[in-house]
Image 1 (tube, rainbow, N blue to C red):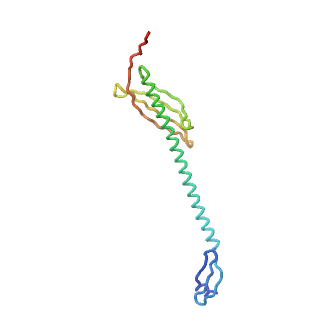
Image 2 (cartoon, one colour; image 1 turned 90 degrees about the horizontal axis):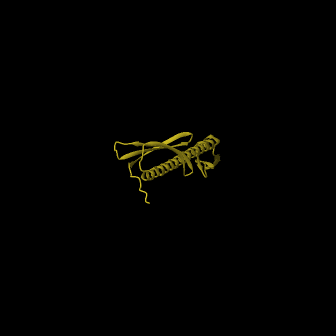
Length: 159
């Protein structure tokens, strides 16, 4: 039997290979997949699935973070546009601070807006900071905008 195994060549499907003696042409017996080979293949397949799952999870978290950041930027754009409209309607814009909350794309945010003087006496700077919580961590982004300081005369009332 030992000489048969030395001179054997496997033929047929991998699962149930027939081993033939190359000298005599006799079938030496059936050889199958060993349990160790099967366990190793299962281990490799499991590791591939876990790696794929981790990659998909990271991708989804990244998409969620990008979507939340886009909502924060949309809220900032909305607030800065509203501030510019309000400032064009007022007779005089003064430096100060304002706070509030807002909902954008189904997410709730807090904001703080500081209006400060600039080196240019004709301009004011708005620093708008948006706050939110994501993944148990506090996040914030700041946006800066300039507006021309206007001192409109009071409107005349017509009789």
